[in-house]
Structures are given as structure tokens and as C-alpha cells.
Amino acid sequence: MGIMKKDSALGWLLVSVQILVFVVFILLPWREPSALSLAIGGAMVIAATLFLVWAFTSLGKALTANPVPLADATLRTGGPFALVRHPIYSGLLFGLLGLTIIMGSWWTMAWWFISVLFFWGKSRWEDTLLRSKYEDAWVTWAANTPALVPFKASRKRFAP
Image (cartoon, rainbow, N blue to C red; front, side):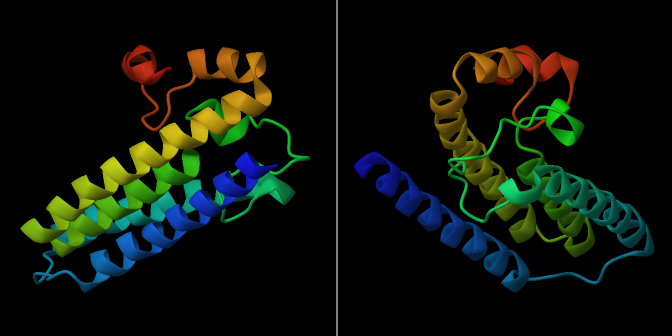
């Protein structure tokens, strides 16, 4: 039980850091966006939003802000979870990349890379929790499903 409380506390800490990531992103200097950056970045933000809605609805009642899996939740491997193990993080990163293209400053690009590192680390920690809970089912799914980037070439690189 102590480990579960520890995991939950770390999960809420990561949620707090994630909120900070978004707040800093919005507070960074912007440049005047061009029509092209608005079109490309805007399309990416819209696509990311649609992907996020798909991921949220696919989780159903298992959706929670804290990344620690709920006790009664089942392993989701269909829908967006057939493309990547962490579709919410992937959608957030793609949307932030779209905003980076719109905002266009070196600061936002640097912060986007920091965001990638944060979500990569958070996804790895969440993978350890999922593997512990779902064991062989997770191992089989993870062997065929990349963590964040839905490309076949990256499957072996990102699989555990």
C-alpha cells in the first residue's frame, strides 16, 4: 500500500509539473505569426485536439489526471492505443509543436524540446506502472506499439 501512495504522490507531482510546462509555454515570447505558420501550426493544433478527444473518450471511466492506473481499469490497446502507448502525451506534444510553429520564437522551440524530454520521462515511468499491473499483456502490447511516435521504424527503438 505504501508504494501505491508513493506512486500516487509522484503522479500528482508530475501533473503539477505538466501544468507548469503549459503555463511557461504560454508565457514565452511570441513573434508575429505569418499566414503560413498560422495555417500549418493551426492545422496541427486542430489535428492534435481531435486525437486527444479520441484518446480521452477511449479511456472512458479510466481517464484520470493522475497517471497511476486505476485499480479496476483494464489495459487499453485499441483505438489510439493501437498507434502509441501514450496517445495523450503524443497529442499534447503534437499540439505544442503546432503552437511552436505559430509562436515561432527560439524560446518556444527550446521549451518544446524540454517538453518532449518531460513527457518521454513521464511515459517511461507510466510504462513501469503499467508493466507491473498488466504484466505479460503489457509486454506483448508494448513490443508492438511505440511509446510516443506512431512510426514502424520507431517501434524497436521505443519499445522496452
